[in-house]
Length: 489
Image 1 (cartoon, rainbow, N blue to C red):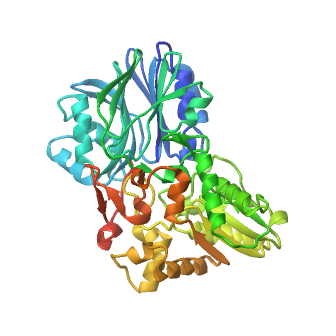
Image 2: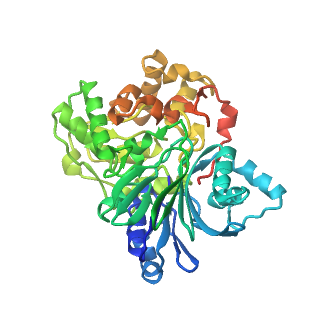
Image 3: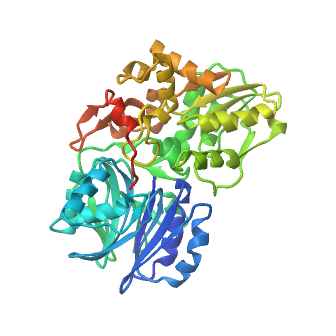
């Protein structure tokens, strides 16, 4: 997931832009960029792998000037993209995932379009979005046309001399929230960016809605869609603890998730602990409900490490997993510990690094409690796992069935014997004493929104189409999902 931020002021906006963008650094970055509008558009992009946003952009921030600006912490491609079009010059940043990107790019090639940003033979997806938009009769019409053509999701900020156009994806998968401070307006993926800069939330942009943010305020340009299915994983894992979406705080939801896990448990343990960072609050909630101590047998060395499921290569994921967590033997040795984590994606780092470290420290019993159900489908709306065979639950199913199967509904059913056998297989594969996953109903209740307003595709295979009608994809072709090698917007 990328983090995008924009600000419009009657004065210079660079301090707000610099720090507002930096408050998205937790999203696990490869590239970052700033664009500002003064007399002309000025853009800066840096590779921030192994570094920090503030370090890379501090000198740029000191030199750039403008009263409008865009910032992005990008999960994959270089952003912002600056383009000169028949609508005039504009800068654009995006957040999301386009499943049919190759097909759309090929269509543009056949029309005579070219792309300047190519990495490993793939087009830059933000540039693709820009090229789709300029095919419209107007900027607004182009954004609407882009929404119709893409499969997946795309929220964007587009800046020109008029202001910043805000467009939230039609499914409402990723948030865009507008804030105001004494006549200065901003828009953000994460409300974390608002607090210390003095902004107050004044509007949650709705799915499909298009808004123009200018020095004079907010102007609605397109009405919202009926469908709203925001990503559940924002609260479980992706979001920063201080952020809120739909008015619901991340930290509070994670604490409730931990409590729900403990309510359904009858485990005797010496302490509860979280896998840092996102698992920490799940464990706090578990400890509060179970009335056992919360302690930190594992600590994260620095926030500068990527999230271990995000890097594209297995080698990089393994390196991050090995380096970022440090065990504390004095707390671990001889103890029965229940560890809470947000999810099990592949399970390889957990098995090969975290659990191995715990054993080397002399732990007595390892118990895992996971804040969401087993992940069954690669995300269709953002950049995360792309291959279905990477998922721990799918490896378990293949081992139990002796082959890939298309209909996994029996394994999704939390009360079925097949689901229980799948969880037991993962338990044995990890080599832990016990493993329990959160029930979908408990996770939804912890978030506090109606289930129909949450995207739960990665657990159930159910997702809405563009008209807001629910469709089931539990029987999506295994061959098709094996070959899914997506790109992020």
